[in-house]
Length: 469
Image 1 (cartoon, rainbow, N blue to C red):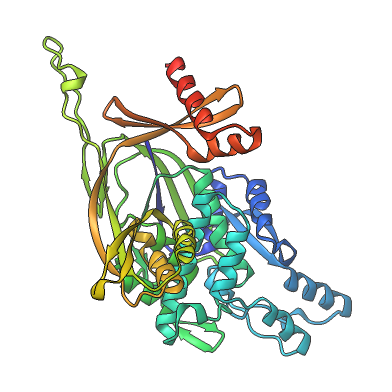
Image 2: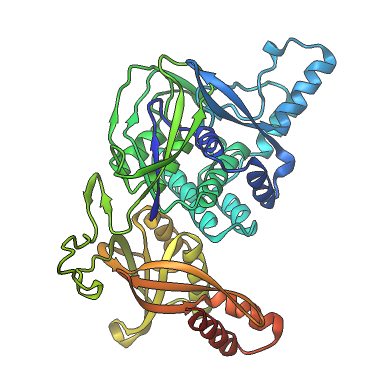
């Protein structure tokens, strides 16, 4: 069974609403806190949740309380100042993360220093994420979301993504919202992601450079780039924030009605304000049969079971339907870069979400020796992988194509050897097992710790699996 997440967004989407829905669906807050502490910025915030009502419906509200805000609140309390005179100094545009909130600058010098200290550029944010040693899928997803966000802001301001000043979308709460959402989806072990069409909202919202029309430019850019279906629900508020929109555009296999599924759980994430309709992001978690697949609302059924009990068809003769998925293939030829740099590019591409990366030796014009670098990824990680290739190599152009690939269904099983536990990847075509391979990293770690050969660990793991079956 494949596990599906469908985000129903009647009042839009924001980062805190995403995490609220995941917590409501069962992700432990303690788990998020533990993993987010690995980012090394835990002194900048406190996390908490609250069950709230939106138009009589109960949902989970997720809060990121910034240390600077808490400090200012304590100062105000100590000096008995009127709180209305000292609004949050830290991020004048936290509306980008927390649905419906507006914050304005404080005018004190100390406050300005606090605000400035939390401004971050994309390379710094990427370094924070990579250094945290998060689960591999979480790291790749988080980098991809921030990559899309940077691309959108860069297009709006006419600058390279690496130069985007993340005073509006890269502060502490945005990092928490994005990485926390990726952690929650990974904890729930979701295989596919779908989103409803997005409401446009309306009016204006306060930003670092003055008031902006809603939808904001970055949101409009993301919608345009990913051809997101939008509509007006008549609510003149900011409903879709850049952070929430970037999350949706990174993960969505399609935008539209819910895909066929057996519904297993619902997660309700509350926005900050009461609106004309319940301000709740609804996360539907369900399962679908392994041959059932779809993109953009077009669904196909998988293998059918023979129903003629008098003359049953042997399982080996039933038509097999393996999974088909869309992938992006990026390739470029390079003849003026150190092989060591190519090795670094491999790691950077995998961190950005690549499924596979490889090179092949080629002969280029004027008989120059070079390499053909190829990266394969899901379409949602295409922008992030492209950015890595341009940033880390000397290439001046990348060819990108969209292809279909047929993949075998895969399951991970665990076996115990005399040296430790090893994960085994089992690939099937229908019900027929066609490939069994121990996970390389598990074998390599045991080999290093026990000071034995990798081949021996690999052999023992395979033997344990076959003995068990």
